[in-house]
Image 1: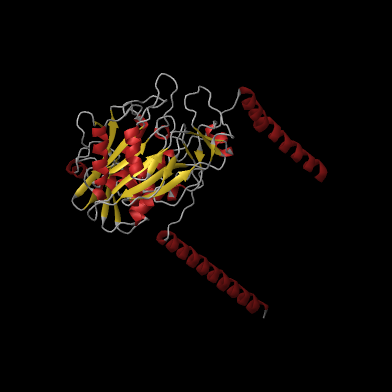
Image 2 (image 1 turned 90 degrees about the vertical axis):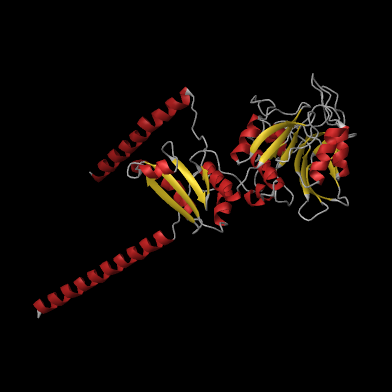
Length: 459
């Protein structure tokens, strides 16, 4: 009786154990299946370094045709590439990734004209583009070029004291402008309308970047013909300050052209006393914008700040040929002063106009034929896109959004891949010694004392 009961109990225990094992194995199998089918991860880095940007998600997620990405390297060096490209693959079933081992398949590298290890090639049908760098910016850039096809060119006007593309100085150069725009897959060239008063036909977008001298009428006529004929232009005009050795002219003929399209550039200087401008800009003469109107250029900038040192205000209105949209304005704590010759500019609430004031506007010009509509953007400042300010928060994204909208690449308007963030902690010698003493001696001493006290209590 007792022996039978023991056997029955052992049988039940064995059955329970078997069922538990089967359940655990089933749970593991289902979890493994779901993990493979629905790959999810969490990026805990402060700037979401391991999360693909909105731009990449938009480009890859909207694929309508098959795209192949081939990566060439040695097998033992493939893992970093897989970490990046597998995130791309999860965005669309139209994207196919191939990893080519150079040791096992050297002929494939020769056929693809691969000259070094660690290169990626994007193929869309018969079109091929090489990634300039193997990171998100390089891969997404190659993908955009392969999908779009053809050359896109930004032409920057020179000849009247505009910012120079070859100037890499911190003060007012546009070397950073050129680098940023080129990384977004545009070619950049400088043109001079004094030599030939005609915008080259290969210019996708024309940029007038802070001229200090006056344009002459034939140049302005060329700009007018270009935009009204369906061209795209970005005008960045600084206030006509009469300070220092390099005063800025009124450039009245250019201002008259913009006024005819519905954008009046005022002869004033904006001073913003809002908390944001004081905190980020450090000066009332460098307004900081944190709120934006509704337009494709600025819709994705929510939560970003942009800075505009030494700006003028704009007045906008629609005309029979143009439709104007405000992009952003200064805060309600801003003033506009017309005293542009004094070496010390101060706010005079009794005389100066009170804000907010429009800082930038976008417009379309209705052409005579469908599809011939011109586009233009006017900003009352050019320093925001210079080497000194381009790295400020959202300035870089705003610039590229403007270029993308002007070139009708609205599908590319979004926040770009993030630069790796340097999050090192800099300590003084005293701080380092304090941290060392705390971690190596104080906390171990507390643990030892606590252990001795517990041992004595149990004794």
